[in-house]
Image (tube, rainbow, N blue to C red; front, side, top):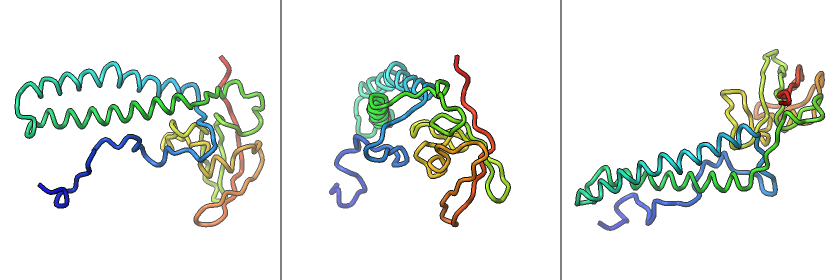
Length: 186
């Protein structure tokens, strides 16, 4: 069938299609905590040593069954292999360019820097607690925000008791820094 009538591309394996949210600003380093680095490394090892070999085995079995054009196990397996390979390439690149920062070794514990856990309140009186982490380990629902996020950028270098201004789409908001903590050195 002519590709003009179906919604398919010439190749499904677009090498570096990862979410735009993980993009780093040009000229910046990929800072990551030691825990974040270990987590990404563990994911890469799991994909490489466990998940990919299992999928390769399923695809090999499905291919041996004959007609591949209507073989769901084969088609899904090939698609899943492409996804695994894409994620492995992404993780490999991110780990190669990662600059590991151990927040426990931060000498200036009275100021907000990478890895700090900050408790602050906004002008409405709501209290928030966030930890500033790397782009690849950000999870806002767990209170982990990327160091390049607007809130983290506003908080950087602030001290306990400071009031900082945060630009939001709704206007300016003032944040009062209540507490700054770092993990204890081990």
